[in-house]
Length: 371
Image (spheres, one colour):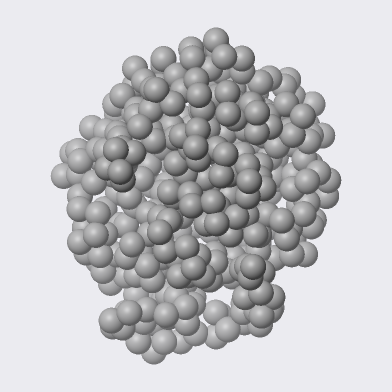
């Protein structure tokens, strides 16, 4: 069966980057007034030439988002099950070569975390682990899903890429959404940042969304780690990937995230920084390109930025996040994956969202609606 690999290899990274930076103000204006925007229009909207048009982009983005999603913001929270990892990744606190304490939660500890998360009001949880196949494997995920399924209407997962048969198994256990970020679509940089472990297999990771589509997953999430490579070029390849997936696996829903490189144990300086104004441009560009896709922003971003992005195209936000196993019930800060920036409680975030005239959605969906 064909996969995204065929399309991906028909594009050259250097040529694609040059074509984005060659876009003019006229190209941007054409994209702004288009009825249906193409990938070439998306290039214009993320180009430096689009910077003076940001206010107009923001207005259109707000209109498209309200038309499709209404004035709603979905709230979600990550539950870190383990920080054990067999990969060496230059940008991650869980990297195998980082001398941090390792921990995988047992069933009692998991339920302690669930109790705290439920008390916050959440009915949507994102399960996160490092990539340690000996300890956090498919059998482990099945046990966790069986354990927590009665307590959540929607369960998402961000773990190591799995085989098709494993995704098919996990969906029967209540898995609704899988997030798998390519980190960067630049193969040279990918190899540099993933020197050891199964994650070093660029091709296998690239084809993971195809396996998810074949497994009939309800929703899948895409994205790159902003800072590893030129963000404009990486974003184009993300849009290219999304465009392919939506056409081939049209029954699945899609969400995009915009994680910027954050401080962690061992810290890595971003190769290419993206400022707040440019991140707003990127978010608006995605909305103009695709009015249907969900756009999520995490607690990696500052309180001030998150306050102002609510009305500009975002449809989902995390709140009250801890990035370490046991972080909610046991407060083991030394085990975190990266430092968060927005430490406000879900209740505080909800008040800010509602003060701007938006409604907080604590429950994403119910399986009974699809029967």
